[in-house]
View 1 (tube, one colour):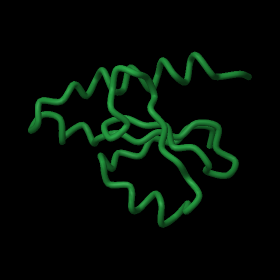
View 2 (cartoon, rainbow, N blue to C red):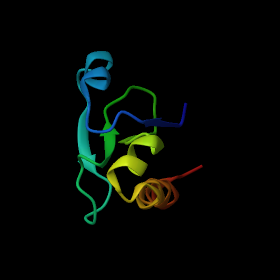
View 3 (cartoon, one colour):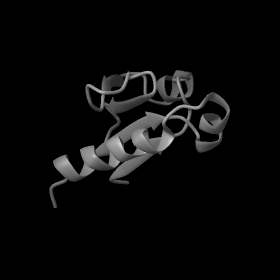
Length: 81
């Protein structure tokens, strides 16, 4: 796939277990990489991201849609056909 979005929240154990060489980088300066991050190092995948499941935001009041918008903006900024 060209894009993967993990909805695991801060939990990265599953991702690291499957892809031990990944690193997590901030998507933008505005948000902490614990809330929304680029997942770098998955073989043959152009873009991978980790953020929260939508249901988690209604409970905690986090700006879920802004995190998703930052992912979309990053893909648009970096996508090359």
